[in-house]
Length: 106
Image (tube, rainbow, N blue to C red):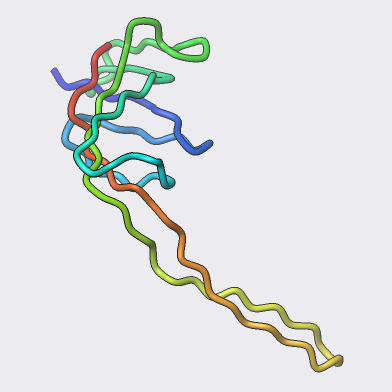
């Protein structure tokens, strides 16, 4: 019976289960380092039982290992004002940390 959990990091929430590889906002962690998250929700994958935290589930944890860091795809940022000959273009690449979920305890 596999468990799923909802974790929060970088003011975003992610639904995870063991074996998932996700990209989260950049953390100051080295490759191979283990991380622990306190889940907001822990449930069975077949929806038979769920524990909702206030704000986190007591005694539950999600462990993960850092796979690496990188930068996402380039996005274009364009500013334009009609009739005044103003246009400005720039690009942005967001930094991320890639992690693999090892275990969900709940």
